[in-house]
Length: 87
Image (cartoon, rainbow, N blue to C red; front, side, top):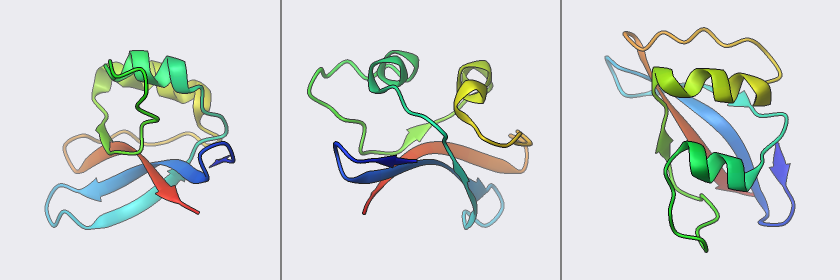
C-alpha cells in the first residue's frame, strides 16, 4: 500500500533462508502506524517505521488483517519483514 503521508510503499518482503535473496513482496491493503509500532515493539514516538522489521509466527494473526491475499508463512524456508520503500 502507498503511504502518501510519508511517501513510501509498505509491504511484507519474503527472503529465502537458503540464499537470502528476495522471493516476493506481499502487498499490505492498509497500514495503521500506531498499531504496527505496538506490534513490532517500536518505542520511538517519532519513528515512522522506515526500517526492516522482522516478522515472527506471533505476528501472523495481527498481519493477516492487513493482507489482501493469504500468505503461506513457511519460516523454515523464508524470512519475512515489514518494509517500506520510498516512492
